[in-house]
Image (cartoon, rainbow, N blue to C red; front, side, top):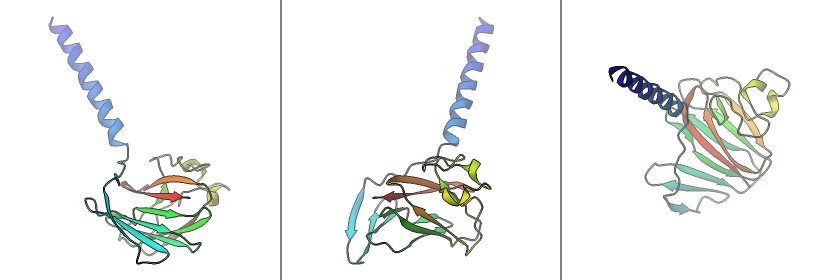
Length: 167
C-alpha cells in the first residue's frame, strides 16, 4: 500500500510540474472586451481606452506610418488597427533593450512566413521580427502586408505583448 501511495504522489508532482512549465511559457492574452469610451476627436487616428486595463487602441485610417512605443510598462498603444500595407515603427522608449516580434514566444511564427529561425538569413527583412534587442531610442520598422489580427510580444520580456489588426 505504501509503494502505491509513493507512485501516485510522484505522478501528481510530475503532472503539476508539466502544467507549471506549460503555462509559464504561454503569453497572457489581453482582454479588450470591456472597452468603454471612443473618442473620435483625434481625426485620422482615433483612440479607444479600456477602463480596467488602461489599454489604448489606436485606429489608423490613413496610409502614413504609425508608431508603437515600447516602454517599461509595455507597448503603447497595446492594440493598433491599420490598413493592409501600413508601415508600423516600433520605438524603444524604455531604458532596457526590447525585441518586438510576432507571437508566439519563443518561435515568432504567428505572422505568416515569420520565425525566429529566419533571423540572420536573407529572409530577415521580410519577417515580423526585429531579430535583436533595440536599445533605448532605437526603432525598427515593419510593413504589414497580410490582413488579420497579429499578436506580438517583446522577446526579451515575453510578458509584454500587443496586437496589430490589419484590415
